[in-house]
Image (tube, rainbow, N blue to C red; front, side, top):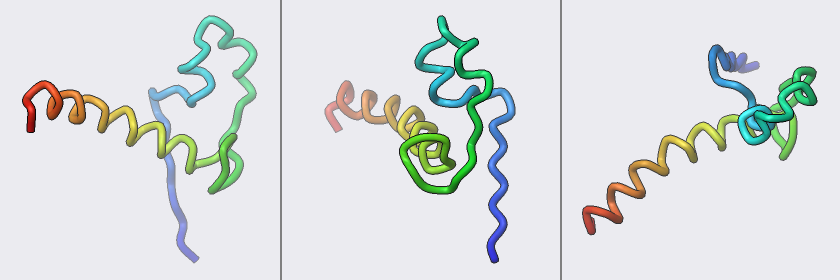
Length: 65
């Protein structure tokens, strides 16, 4: 099978980033499955890509491309 390695490194998981004031509640959050809305690689990957593309979308709108 395919082995996928997902390293978060210095990037906090989605729940931690969205509720940093309550970070203590999410210290036990784990990525335990591949697909799904919560605790998944899919959720983290979607959030990573969305954040990266947002700046380009804004540049296109500002530049009227």
